[in-house]
Length: 130
Image 1 (spheres, one colour):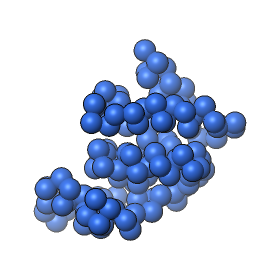
Image 2 (tube, one colour):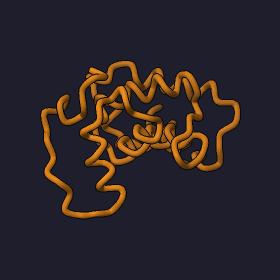
Image 3 (spheres, one colour):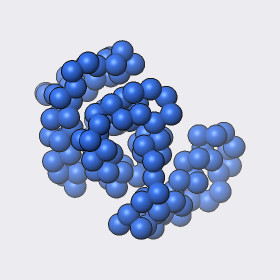
Image 4 (tube, one colour):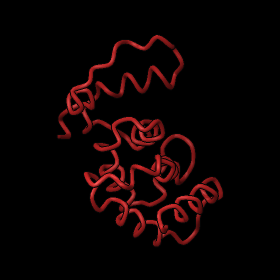
């Protein structure tokens, strides 16, 4: 799986973007990159846009298990923020299996919550504990 791109895994080949913002062009570009070449920032960016979630979420969880406050380009915990702000339905997807429990275990280990994610983390914990 890691040798494949999101385009290949999803069998969904996007046309060239019609809008030329950095975010749009980077998301399109990353869909053509093999997953084994992804960085923390790549996970953060695509998950923040809810792109490739079924494939990227388990990989991001593995990164967070090693370092819960893994950092892309912005601040410690920015990958975690992208994960916890995914749509609520993500956590109901049976295909993602135990990813929610893994994530809750990761969150329990954090001793100091960065201020940049406090609000989103509280909201996530409230939603997932219902």
